[in-house]
Length: 317
Image 1 (tube, rainbow, N blue to C red):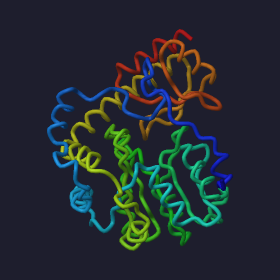
Image 2: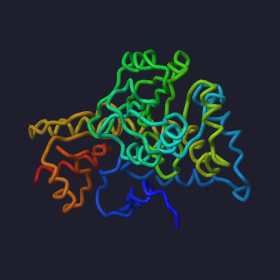
Image 3: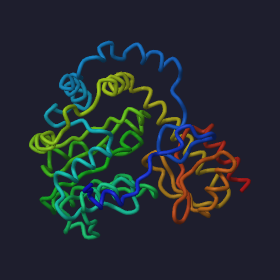
Image 4: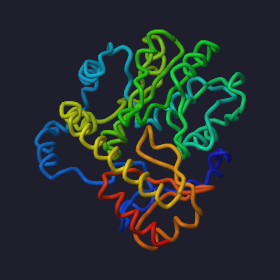
């Protein structure tokens, strides 16, 4: 049986630990559940007509009104990861640029499409800018984004997945630069990682080209309806972001008392802590799950109550 060896040799494993016991601060997702009243209200709004194919077009108008853009400038994707895959397939022939280290799927999709990551942004067929980037929380300023868009005729894709967590809104820039694409999702600030819904925004000619490469349906009705409910109740997102910001400030204050240096946290829902990476294993033994990195640990931020749980254990070790 003939196979593509570069796909066969990826050795990807399925995500594990969905039902892990403990305080899960290792994935950049919402760390506390929604209130039961919210979930009950959401269930009342979900589809009665799930036997039909989804009417995706009507949701383009709904979400475009929410974003205050024309629906011709919007395209739904399978989270931001689906946007990354789509753009690599469409725009990159041999080379691609993205920051490293970063979200693991950049490397995976580059290998799938046999692309070489070029350290020189000027040589790349396609440019990704992570804003902010994991695990350190580095970010691009508006001037830097403008300069990169102005200096190239290649597509510049802004990974804006953490928009909502204090990140500046760069959406107006798509009016000025016809090579800028902005990628967002409902996984982070809205806390809806499981619905796997993202979206791309750009000028109409780019969206039309990207849409030509779509599947039969970009997404499903349940995901669209869930996201629709939450954009109609955006106060739920705003309340959680406020709680997370308070938790972040408390965490940094307590770590400062221990002379432990942090990095990032201004944008996004994560922070990097400069400490012995092996502390991740010690934390896990105490029921606190974080992400082990080369020179420290990455911690998902949450409300003060969850940060307190981390601090109590971290102080001991």
